[in-house]
Image (cartoon, rainbow, N blue to C red; front, top):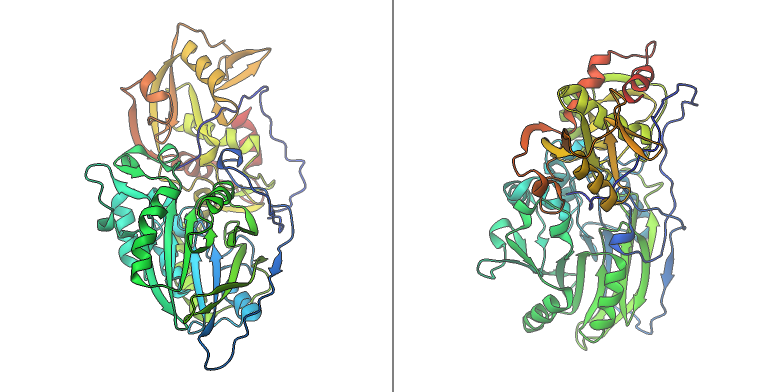
Length: 524
């Protein structure tokens, strides 16, 4: 569910001041066309650095009324992460349709195919709280034609996954996923290798791919029974089947990073595939490699990508008309989608948006104070424990200035991870720190002069002594060392966000008595 564990080493006791300028967090509206591997992308988000691009490609094909030449435009998003309302006002799902109407003349009945590169549900509270049900309904109203299976589609377990696929009006796709027991495809979960549809007289095959690294970043109990086949091998198996079905245009939507897709394009240049849509690394990019258009659209519905083709259904010729990326900015609200979002906003308002605190200073998700605050809140709820650790990949947003709601906390800690109590020796703790890098939030300890000290007592962490340690249950899997160090750990069944919610409520903060002072006392 989260990215692999590395360790954040805290070198000083943290202090929190209230001398900040109370400016709300903002989202940088810029994009990048670089290729970045999954291992290079930070657990929390990709950095976007360049303006959207549109690259028309000349074509000699002239579309004449009555001819067999038809146009098809693919509209593409990925890593939507439940942000139906938009990270910023005016950049939600209903506005994206408005942008497409303005730029492409989009209509639901027109020559358009809307696709997703996966990771649709987990992120914003309005989706996470309902385990993706609300986001499925929004995407249904947007008339998506297909989506790649992303790693976060497993976040709510296999039962949750099958519930969502049953509600989807579009197929969830993964051609490289099989059951280990018998080699069958997981169609019982509503996952198909591909789909074929007809748009504007063109028969279009859409194949899905899921990242082969998925088992290492999700709960093994959800993905352990599956085989994740290589992308080239999966396409080699499925393409002959698709060709027999007789199609005019072959597209791939993949929850796969651009670096891998560029490599794949070189391998399948003569296969007939004309587009590879990416995901997972949250890049914004468009390019063409060996006559295959490769696109990816960032995350959170902040941007989109597109590719337009002309297809001669008689000769089989396919030409690229244009491809590129654009920002979800300035679009009019599309009423059918707005209506669905409004319904879910009203439904969630009472539970998620009631104030539980007030903050004078903002903290983004990379803030050391926020990271420390989360794990120290765990220790406050479990006073008989000494140390708390959580991986930074499980922290997905920050606090803005003003009222704090449960919704804000869910956006920061969106997964259904629970808190697990284990016992480790001081030497085991030191070994974990030495081996795992810099991607862990640490509570209950500080590092001074090269030594780890317990925050409460100032006593050094002693190698041969045993300490009670809190981690989240995603970390208590075979992807991390903790299960092997203590296989008798106790799962409290308390969601990892709940101690932070309770701690904030207990402070009874408001505009006259903001939470900032209490945070300073918590993380000192």
